[in-house]
Length: 235
Image 1 (tube, rainbow, N blue to C red):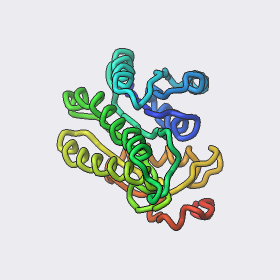
Image 2 (image 1 turned 45 degrees about the horizontal axis):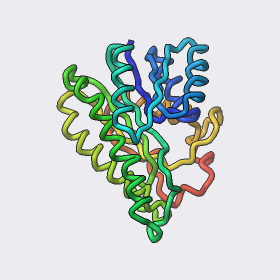
Image 3 (image 1 turned 45 degrees about the vertical axis):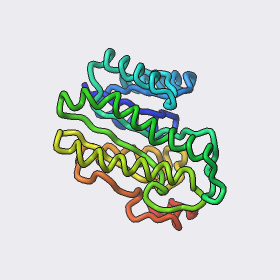
């Protein structure tokens, strides 16, 4: 069986991804800070016949990420897919005119430095095996300037640049690096619209399976001016 490690796993997109990949006979390793939520998600997955486990780690802390990765590799033998979609940070989205060293540095560390640490924890084994996939979920400010998301946009666009370079370097090594920039506000599962985490998870599994597009906005063609409209009409 293959294994997916989901960084920043929550009860929205993280759980939907776990179910979607678990449906395809993946073992699921959930990584996040909230142990209670992780326990509940594992119980829900196991009730559906999905083999799952959880690991408590703070993405700000390199040693905790490395420890979680090591435990997952010890448990399952290898990590085939990394999915990165945390919602970290100690500051709210901040307009570009109100940026400070503190709120910018915190957000940069939350997205870029944490992604670097996670990648470095799984990359050596993927390079040794010459196979694997890394899937990164960000927001629309990774690809478009949105002034009210000053701190987040700078961090996510930096992350996007890192991922583009990873893709260029690792594709010849058999490792698929993919980025999806979400232009939706994720809602409750079951609505069946582009904002439904189950629909997004299905998009990700298809992207992983096809491996023909490394980066794309989601839904395709979305722009910042679309963010404040009801996405149900885009179904």
